Structures are given as structure tokens and as C-alpha cells.
Length: 291
Image 1 (cartoon, helix red, strand yellow):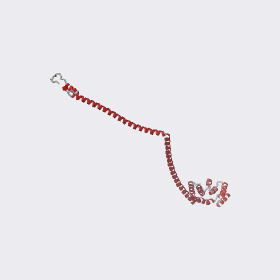
Image 2 (cartoon, helix red, strand yellow):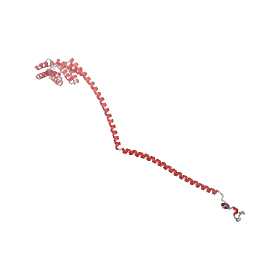
Image 3 (cartoon, helix red, strand yellow):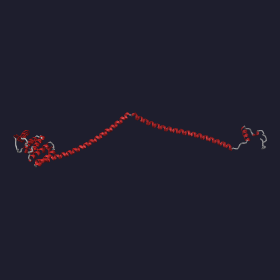
Image 4 (cartoon, one colour):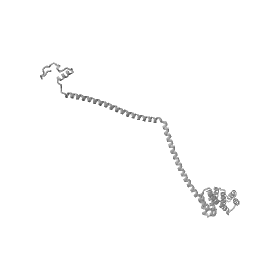
């Protein structure tokens, strides 16, 4: 871009030497002296002489035009534009002079980096009077404008990419901060209430132990109840057995024939080891049997 701008400056200043020397309708001595200084490159002295001439010759278009050229040669672009504008405002410019003024105004705007404005004035210069210098400078500024647009697009894309990356980094940092904050909060709560957690664990262990004890007690109670039930059942069975035996004995006794009184006595005597023959003779029985 610097090479292009250097080339632009070459084209900018080349026409100045040709355009600085023009025929004046009315010439002041200062204008003649100013052209001499301008020719040898003494631009500050030329500016001083042209400034005097523009004051002496009011509403002289070429006097302001020469002053603008001297200012532009010193890269005083803003002041040069003012001098060119005053030259146009006199209303005494020809097509040829207007073409030169627009051309040099384009040069001053290009020197200020206002390439789009410079493009407009080069086109005005060509409209007034076609010239090779204006056409070449117009092509240069158009290339610079295209290059600037391309650079702006690249910078815009880079900025968008950078903004997106910054946003992603910001979101990641925020997520990390939130996670760290949550961990700190959890740790703080844990440090503030350690007894509660221990109590919860102890209560849970106690509940589990109580459940186990209750299960054991239930088993023992069930076992004791079963033992009592078994004992009760055994007693009932024994009682039933005894009653059954008694009933059997009674039944047997009922089933046995009643012993006679003689047999009873005999058994008694037998128990006394007394023989029946030792008994006294009883009275005569109905059966006529005596013992």
C-alpha cells in the first residue's frame, strides 16, 4: 500500500509544475516572484508571494489556484483545499482551470486519506476536461479503495471470530466459576453441619440395629410362644391320655363281670394266706354247698 501511495504522490505532484505556470488575466509582481520560487522548489517563499498576490488581486481565480499549489507542495492539504475552493468561488474559472483545480483537490484529498472523495474530484476533473494524469490518479485511488474494502472485510471477519472466541471463553469461565462457587458452598455447608450428618448416620445405624433387635425379639417371642403352646399341648395331651386311661379303666371295670362275694372273700383270704379249708363251715346255703 505504501508503494501505491508513493506512486500516487508522484502522479499528484507531476501536474503541479505544469499547472502552476498559467497565463493570468491580470498579473501581480508577487505572482511573478512566486512562480520563480516555486520553480526552484522554494515552496515556503512561493506560498508567501502567492498569498500576497491573492490579497492584492481580489477575486483572482489563478492567484488562489497558485497559492493552493504552493500549499499542496508542502503537504498542507487542508489549507490547499481552502485556496482551491476560493478560486472556484470567484466565478472566473475556465473549463481548463476548473479541470486543474478538481484534479489538485483530488490530490489533496488523497493526501488526507479520503480516497472516495478524491475519486469524485478526479471524475469531475475528467468531466471538465479529459487528461491522462486525472485518469491515472483515478485508477490508483480506485485500487486503494478496493484494497481497503478487502482489508475491512478481513478485519471484520477477524473481529467476529475474536468476539465469538471471547464469548465462548467468557461462558466457559462463567461455568467454571459457577462450579467452583457450588463446590465452595457445599464444602461450607458440610463444615457448618458435620454433626447433623453424623447424627443422621447414627440414627440410621440405630434404626437398622432396632430393626435387627425387633426381628430377634419377634423370633424369640414366637419361639417362646411356640414352646408354651407345645407345653400346653403336651399337658393337654397328657391330661387327655390320663382321662382316656381312666375312661379305659372304668370301661374295663364296667366290662368285667362282678365278682361274687365268695371270690372276694377268697381273695382276701388268699392275701392272708388262709386256705379256704381252714374256714369254718358256713351256714347252709341255698345251693347246699358248704365250705
